[in-house]
Length: 291
Image (cartoon, rainbow, N blue to C red; front, side, top):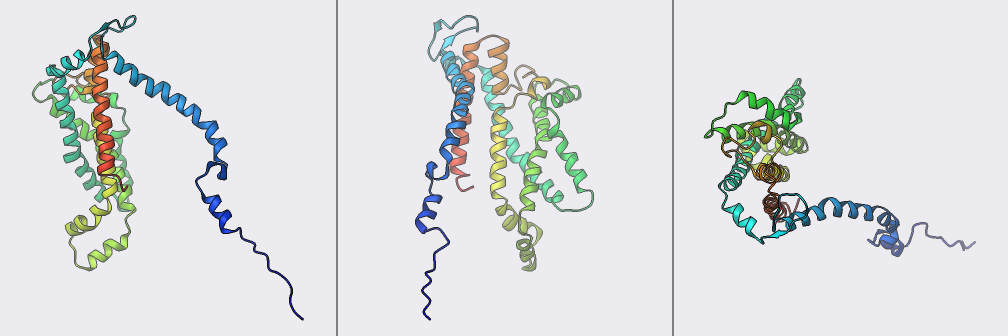
């Protein structure tokens, strides 16, 4: 007896699968979600990011004390005054010094401690907590604590601030590196050890390359955070003595808010924005494009 049963395919056709996997928002029902959530997000971003940036750029073209509406248009004179100001030049130098110390001292210190604390041994969590506690402490509280430790010395003030910055933030980078180290396949390190690699050779040729994405991310955080440093500087030194510890943000606060030179402060904000955006996009394009 001949079997006349025709088998019916139970799986969807290749065309339907392809349509389901396509990026068409209608195919996956994404369009209603986009219409629901995207406009509020764009509205908030416009109100709290785009408009303040545009206002800062506009105010930077005026000599204005913040009262009433700006009337005295001076063009780019605020920027000319800014770059001829010794205190702002010192602030730029200090930001660059903070970035250098963060990359050369803070991140290597964090990697070294992470190498010791990444192993799952008894008591290691306590040491991780001890080193991470300064980062949990509020910046203002840390600044006030160290203000009572230090004495005002104009020539040593910035180095004292750098020491506090390293103490405060290296724990954050250490935890990043611990997470990166724990994700490394242990068999790779065991294979290198079997091949006779020393501890330094394993770190140099195995561990560090595998930590590459974490190191690049850590440097990115260090650079952007160094440019925006404010909360700890103000209670610690207030930018003094004699403007020796000013950063760009403390300079903006001192002149734009405290001294009511809103036009000049807005010019500082524009300069800081351009520097941050240029470094962020340039760094991500050059060093993090494959991460």
